View 1 (cartoon, rainbow, N blue to C red):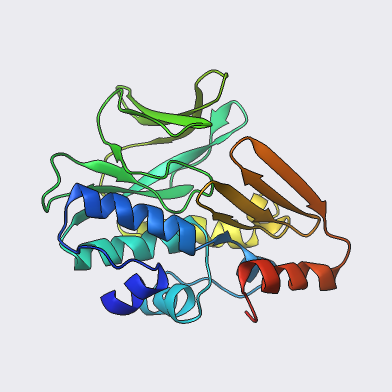
View 2 (view 1 turned 90 degrees about the horizontal axis):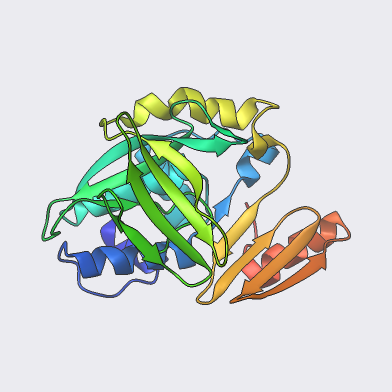
Length: 251
């Protein structure tokens, strides 16, 4: 399982559970495994079982959303000797935060880590290196900066775009969760008209200098501060772009 997973994300570095390895694994995952919802749009049920997730993300080289991406990444990290805790996060919805279990994120500790870290390979565009799980921890990644703020009841992940103000991204607690805790919200996001995952196709992946994002209507390529938008004119063109740009032949 470990060898195949590391091949999938093109990681060939040290496997000892160090901060350097965790950071490299985190970035490698983001560059190799897309954030996507094509199963949801096609009506294919997503089941949060390790073997099903491994088959989809590793054997079939697909992507997924947070429960799948962070869920399987947690399995890999544990196999490499890290201690991983599943955390429930509430994504920002307008001026408020969404419901509990809206998002799955990870606390990673143990091994040779100096302190716990927040890891997240399942939020789409987010921090690329794990964040120290400490109040005020901050990382500046150029066009975006990220920081953690600890409140009395919840922590917040905040994001700042270049030249902008800090804005909340999601709120979470440090209470340990089980994968089964996320199953009701996973079903909700697959079936509810209120879920943004049921409203249109999403396929997005990080690149070394930016991100490629494909929807039914456009392809957006960002590199540094440069942004290119290309309209998608037809269903055939959508699948052509998926094959040519994302190397996806079939679902």
